[in-house]
Image 1 (tube, rainbow, N blue to C red):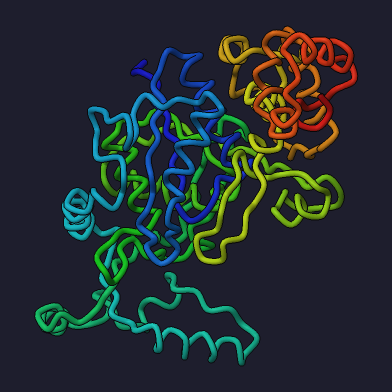
Image 2: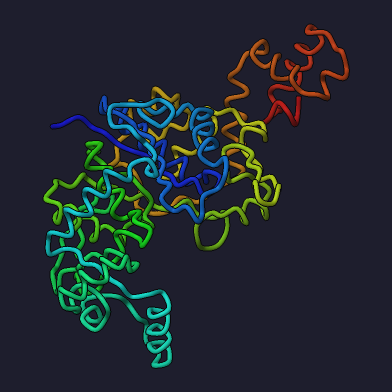
Length: 397
């Protein structure tokens, strides 16, 4: 078997959500369990949603959690560059390659034309999709004469590259967590692979990067499960071996249905981000676990168990113990419900494991304590009296 290589590939479009941290953590634990490599790749092709400072935030958050990449924009590595925006020449080469196959075509439809068609469909109570039923009636290299296509290209007419979804094929797809399932290609549309600015979409860029970086396993959120058929077909189109896939279930809100959101954190009074994040556009600050007083080891211990169970139902595990025990086949298919009380319980367990001397500098860092000029001896006495009842240094000691 070739070396295990996994990647965490966030977009710098804002702070890193709990779900993203858990994906990175599972990637890291799996790689280290198998003696493999954990790669951090920044997927920044969506320039319209780019947020200043988000990339640095992602790297700092992972470091605080102890999830240190083997390769990244910061650490370098043999498959650099690790930012998609710096890999355009690589993508151009593969765009030319896929256009020589029967799996892709050029589409000249303008956004206005497509919007007009959508409205026509909506007026009939239908939903428009660019697919094998509609592509033969639209402005693309499948319908236009070859000479007209050449003329449009020579005139620098804007175009996108679309995937030509095969007609009426049953795809049998494998997922490490979810098992085997089937998809009919007639239910899938002709996704855009390359935008009219020449940059690839997520679908094409991540396939190319995973191939180039020799990624053996793709561990990602279940929101990407509907794209698995397209991605497997893209590997087929390029003549490449596909990695193994594992789609993680959602972290669910504390009450009701749906995935955990920032709104839930605001409502129930807990952070959904690892570190404080200041929105560069509005100046508003979102709370982070670090600033709320959580120990990083308590945070990742809690997060690991939101969707995975170790042997003997142990709850307190060091990072080394998690690495030793981690197995993708033990990751749960069902979503894991978030609990603020459980997160606080984990922090309490880790606080009580620390010696009074380990807690002393943390207590002395607090501005309220610095204003008192209490001696170390007095502070150690306070710690010994409060430690068993405390959950956070900053709130109770």
